[in-house]
Image (cartoon, rainbow, N blue to C red; front, side):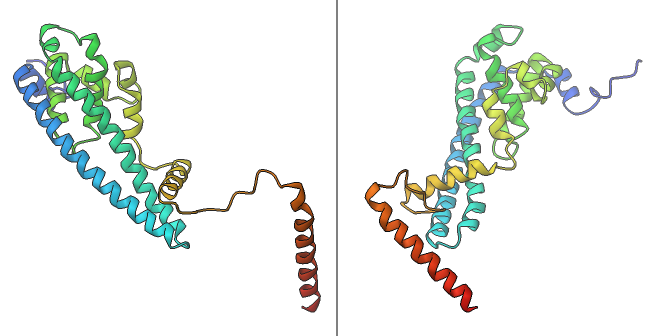
Length: 231
């Protein structure tokens, strides 16, 4: 007997070789995934709303803006996850509707190329929230081969397989950039009519205001130099 490929001698390799694609099981998995996704999304929505309320309260204190900014990073992270789950839901529903096309063709149907590749890619980032994606990945491996699954999961090959670029960006978020946090913080403040940050300077000063402003500036300077001389 020849030496077996070690990659096929354990884990999914043996599973793919022993079993074939099961359309009925795949349909059940898709329905379970959609049900769980709706529940998970509702929980994350509630979590995000709770975080937004915390940020609001911190901003109202006036001197807690830095703490609010840190907490707002968690809000942005939840934003990214919710955006990803919205895309996943559309993909799951699309695949459920067009599942017969998978059974009737040998290769990946062109109209499902992005859908299937995206679900395989997402399985590695949603193991806790959506364990059904791992089961879907196994079914696709039995249908299209382990090489296809590995390519969809790869950083450099996933996009070539059709992985949705937006969901890849949302799922891979680990550290939220500060510009995104700043904009989200301002959005929460604006929604709740809270003033944050340094007040903006007026775009233009009316001509009649100039004498008064000049007088104020001169008075302030005289007061400053007087205090400095006393010291």
